[in-house]
Amino acid sequence: MPIHENIYKAIREKIVLGKLMPGERITEAELAQKFSCSRSPVREALARLEKEGYLEILPRRGAVATKISPREVSDYYALLSVLEGKAVEWAAPRLKPEDLDRLEAINQSMKNISADSGSAVEDWVELNWAFHQMFRVGCGNLKMDWLVQEIRARITRSLYTSLMVPVFDDYIVDHALIIQRLREGDAAQARQAMEMHILRAQQVLDRFFSLNQHA
Image: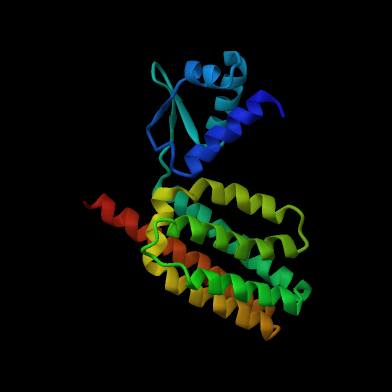
C-alpha cells in the first residue's frame, strides 16, 4: 500500500474515533517523522482528507480537524435513511431464516450491553455496525456497503455516538420491529421501520446541536 494511503487512513481513523478532535492541529513535519517519509506523501494525504471534509488547511496554522456542522449531520442522516431503508427492502427477499436469527442474536447482544460499562459505546458501535451491514451486504447492490460506510465515517465520531447511550433501548425496539417486518415478509414496512430508526438518531443529534446553540 502506498505510504500516502497509510497516512490518509491513519488520520481519518483518528478523526472518526474522536482521537483527533475538531480544531486540533496536524503538522506535516510530525507526520513525516512518524511515517519515516518525505513531506510529499503527507501533503497528498492531507489534501485528500481536506477534499473529503475531514480536515481544513489554514494559512500559517496548517491542517486542523474540522468540526461537523448541524446542517451536515442533518443532510447525512437524510441520505442514510433513504439508502439504508432501500438496503433493507432489497435484502428482504434474499434473507434466509438463519440470517434473521443472526439479526435477533445481534440485537440481543446489544440489549445485554450495560450503559455503565466503560466500553458501552465501542461495544454498541461494533454490534450496530454488524446489524446494519447484513442489509447493506445482502441487498445485492455492490456499492451500497461502500457508500454507506463513507457517509457513516463522517458522522460516527465518539463525541456524537456517546449521545446515543440514553436511547439504546429505543434502538433495540427499532431493530426488533425491522426483524418482525422481515419475518412477516413485508419489505416495504421493513424499509419504513429502518427509515424511522435512522431518523431517530438524527433527532437525538438535532436536539444536542439545538441545546448547545442556546447554551
